[in-house]
Image 1 (tube, helix red, strand yellow):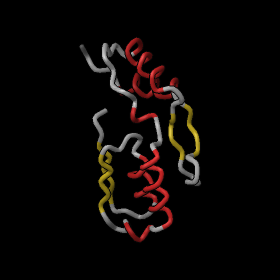
Image 2 (cartoon, rainbow, N blue to C red):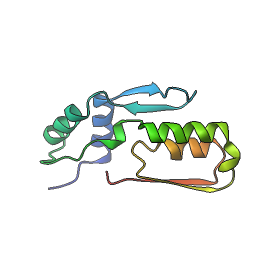
Image 3 (cartoon, rainbow, N blue to C red):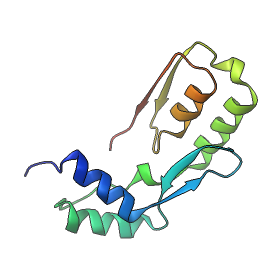
Image 4 (spheres, rainbow, N blue to C red):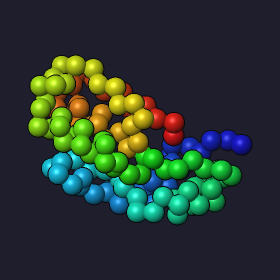
Amino acid sequence: MTAPSPARLRAFVRRTTRLVEVPDLPGVRLHLGDDAMKICRLAGVELGQPDPPLPYWAFAWSGGLALARHLVDHPEEVASARVLDLASGSGLCAIVGMRAGAASALAIDID
């Protein structure tokens, strides 16, 4: 099976999520989903994935929200540093790290 094209993936994200400002992080917006299982089912049908993984990318998880808020409050923690956002989900901490002055950020997750 051929992987979906980047354009098809972008269209899927836009159809299944809403672009919203992240609570308590002014100016940070993410494409967030409301129903993980619905996104999984749609990925199976629309993207031809027989056993799609949970869409970790479509949610701002509580641990990431707390760490992102910490980085907003303490940008000196990452100023000019390299940030690794491991098990990144939506990539929120990498995004906020860059906004806080990191030299670079790398977001890594299984999906």
